[in-house]
Amino acid sequence: MVKIAILGYGIVGSGIMQVLEQNRVHIEKKAGCAVEVKRVLDKRDLSKELPSIYTNDFETILNDDEIQIVAEVMGGLYPAYDFVKQALLRGKHVCTSNKELVIKHGAELLSIAEEKDLNFMFEASVGGGIPVVRPLNTALTTDEIVAISGILNGTSNYVLTQMSNLGKSYDEALAEAQHLGYAEKDPTADVGGFDACRKLAILMSLATGKQVDFEEILTEGIQNINQIDFAFARAFGFTIKHMIDGRITPSGVSARAVPMLVHQSSPIAAVTGVFNGVMVQAKATDSVMFYGRGAGKFPTAGAVVTDIVDIAKHLHRHIQFSWSSEKIDILPFDSYKTRKLVRLRENKTENFHMAIPAYPGQIAWLTQSETDKSTKDSLKGLNVERILRVYEPMETVYDQNN
Ligand code: HSE
Image 1: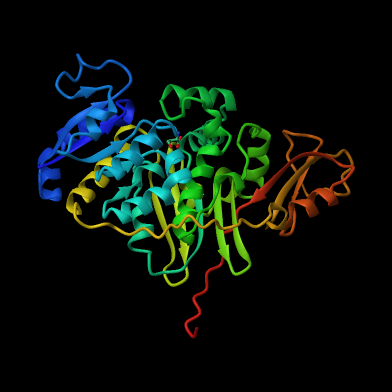
Image 2 (image 1 turned 45 degrees about the horizontal axis):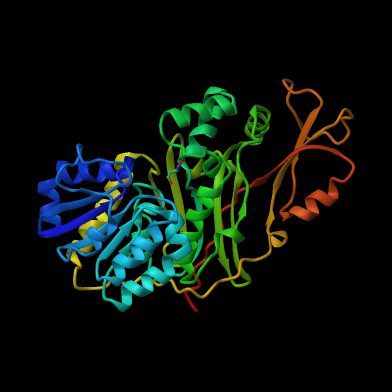
């Protein structure tokens, strides 16, 4: 029997209880022992709902030597960081769904876990129910990862899919996403690209083995995307997605979380609704893609329970993650080159490339691959309505002679 504590009894915390209860027999078989929730910490008074296990005092958990695993699902940096650090220092294993915590303090918490021969796991912090952290650290660990791209925010993807497929307005689609519980408390984190940017920083840190600071990632949201953008994107064979796009090249590391045009033939274009899809490109393996529910109670809770089971199987062995606190610099944004779809107001037709009858006076064309600055410089003096970058996967060629 392994005893655990859950910090935070919100959507994910209560989901963990339900998954542990409903899959009890299966989990016991996989973990090699029963998993019992000994304490649940929450700042609300849940003493009636969880009579024998509720506490609002973290010391109760910290001082209980029977509790070997702490699952932190409170979210936010404080007090989560203090609780997790103290738990590790007291010899308890920790798993978390908290991406803010992982990207800010992951390297430090992993090094404490290593020193103490414990485990710190965070599968649910990226991509909800999609296993992507673990594969990066296991199946793909011997290969050289060169790119991580795709969709890591379910809310944005839901909004863009509703706009694209059903012609809904941005506001209408966002209200629906909030109603369905996909969005964070403040939807700016989702639609502004900040949630995806943190998740990309975690994956890029795992891929490079060094600290990628999310503040250095080029981040833009979907708030300005409208039906005219979709009409012109379609006319050129694209759809619009909020993309994460991280690349590791001999000249450096680039990372962005921005809306992009994705060709309709790309598997990423087929990732719709609240689903996430992450493509990892590695030199020998080439492309692999992870697809699933990136948000929601049970997918996220299931990922936390997977960490709990993994820890229960490795109570006496630290599972190594290569992620040091040494910072890796991100290439300056003005060095990133992409093709772009440029749309502007133009009554003359001699520059005409593509016009759509429904939107008279607007024309659009695709540029060559160039920096944002080159594109802007070439458009000086024109009535530019929108510039959207085009996503093109990185070419991976494995040099067999090297
Ligand atoms: N709000 C996030 C999303 C899920 O929409 O993908 C939690 O990270």
